[in-house]
Amino acid sequence: MRFQGEEEAAAKVPVTSPFRYNSPLVQVSLIGLVCFCCPGMFNALTGMGGGGQVNPDAANNANTALYTTFSIFGVLGGGVYNIFGPKVTLAMGCSTYVLYAGSFLYYNHQQDQTFAIFAGVLLGIGASFLWAGQGAIMTSYPTATRKGTYISLFWIIFNLGGVIGGLIPFILNYHRKEKAETVNDMTYIVFMCFMSAGTLISLTILSPDRVVKDDGTHCTNIKYSNVTTEAIEILKLFCNWKLRLIIPAAWASNFFYSYQFDNVNGLMFNLRTRGFNNVFYWGAQMIGSVGIGYILDFSFKSRRTRGLVGVGIVAVLGTVIWAGGLANQLNYSFDKPPNRLDFKRCGSDFTGPFVLYFSYGLLDAMFQCLVYWVIGALADTSETLSRYAGFYKGVQSAGAAVAWQVGKKKIPLLNQLIVNWVLTTLSYPLLAVLIYKAVKDTDGSKPAEDDDTASGLPPPASMKDGYKELENSITTEKNG
Image (cartoon, rainbow, N blue to C red):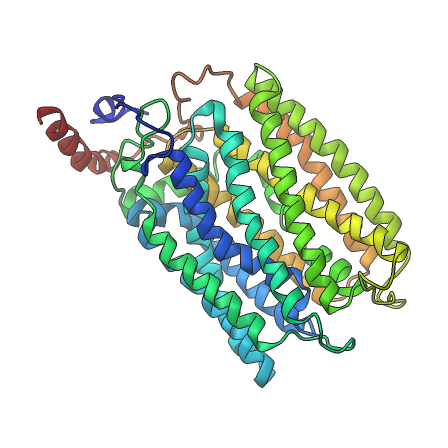
């Protein structure tokens, strides 16, 4: 699609350094720091099993509320980002993480789920804003030939938050009594401090029209959108055949968290070992993101070939890891719970389940980075990719909402594992088809055209409105 002002916006500007403030490297690193502090700490909190509580019901109900709301607002998040820009959108999203962690501090004393569930609802709204913006920044700011690298960079910084977040409960609860099952107050307070810092960092993110890619082009050709435009574009997402092929992968990509966190880490290990395990679970994600990022950017000259090879590698690795999970799961159930393992005292009994949990983290990163790379290969502009990322996160969250209730209903553990395995396996051939049919081999010298009209619907006339301010600003720069 081409609109008034696009030619001016596409004009290249001199690139002085990859470390300049308006570079993709700096901006992707900053959004990585935001997610380090907010979703990263949230992941560490959730990864302890039951939100660090002996009874996981409060966390399961809060997460169900969170992901139910997220599934609705996730689809709308891209539109909100395009209208309000990154600073307002990201700051609103980050602030809800602080409230969520605070609700578990409250639950530590009052044992009342109401606040936790309410905080979960608000976090579902806030997280949809944050992740739509994150997806747009991570996938649209890099050039076409380096999207895998920048996705890996983000994933490393983001999951370093999970590593540090895993150390927090591990250190603060290390010397507590063996039978302690609930983390102390300081654990939640430290999480809240990190999340508050993330909210402040989000205010340093530049709007897409001010960011210049490494090839000298701007990341977008509009400065703002409007409600009418975004409403129409969001409706068109559901008619886009490419996004429909992503739905199984999106649904599966967070579905396995409730099983892995509550029924592997939460059931098999004691409190301090759960924190220890989380350090390596999120550390494994950093390793996995580097590996898949290299494959998707550097393994072959053809971008389509790189994508197909990436799918094949993740499929084989996923099959091996879930097979290992099956072997482990046959040893225990809800009716025959395992003895809690401690990383210092259990020796070889600890090693196998620990390696399995580490491998789950490795697979998670490779799977999600692969999907993000595919999404990034479908378009180049920030406004389009923010909608695509919002759609992905919305479907992902719908799956997670169902998964957390599956965990609460005490569905047999073996059944949960099989469902997770089937869902991820189903997504591989569909991603391969999408890559084969939709990912074009480009030389990186010009951006791929955004196929936003794949549904057959025409673009709204109101989209032209968003170009006026940018056109005027570029004309002023040229005259100066």
